[in-house]
Length: 371
Image (cartoon, rainbow, N blue to C red):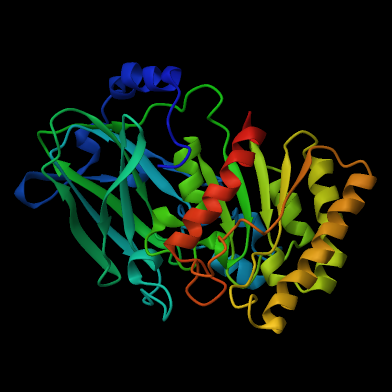
């Protein structure tokens, strides 16, 4: 598995500390049938959420953003993309019940498992590995995610729906088992990486939540990622720079070009980055070029559609460098989706393969910038 072997010191940290956390009081859980205790995910804690002052506990933007950011961005901020629950349990089976906010469980080009489902990983000796998913069949769902778990305490990472809002989420285990919050991230891994962008960042069209490229990099780098992808949006409004600059992050990744015409790139990129740098002088900023639209190898119009954007994107970067903007970095599009034109659903939105390739391409530089 690519770039995810943990350093021995990090392994030692988790082996020695991970399962010494105080268990969550079972009295706070709801008792269900067959001796199952249901723990509210909010009592365990969320990762991947930038602000605490939100109208709804699973919103991605703070309540003060309402009426400030464009209405479609505010609406899409109700999607729980990038959020996850990290916990430790010695249960032999794990259940989940969750309710989403929108009756549209799937899209024509994205399955319900990615739009509205759950995705469960467990930490092994070599890092995080997938073990189960929660498949939605209605607005409210209950499922046994996994059974036959080997004895002992294990650390889990449960990703929430990408393109739907989460109304509620509970994790169910036998009343004889214990559940606790996961340990704090090791030193140097606590600050999140923030990724701001379009539907691609949002997770379209991953088959399951853990396959969006920010989620993949989060596992490989073993640190939280904040997903601020907004389908059809991510157009670098100056108000978003003000909001993003409030968050103490390891890196700001800006992947907004796909929804911006060349003229809009020329208009907005420089002011946006300068405002962000003014608010937060130290955090590295990484500008990612527009992906190569996959029919562009054959269709000149599709090739010109991304080339023209990237010309302006690079001009903006050069202007910012000439103006002395510090800790600014650039990533070209060439390696993002591979060279065989097989990485997308529709020529633009990645499949799981495409997202994996994007993570492979970006991870080494993001890792370096985190250090």
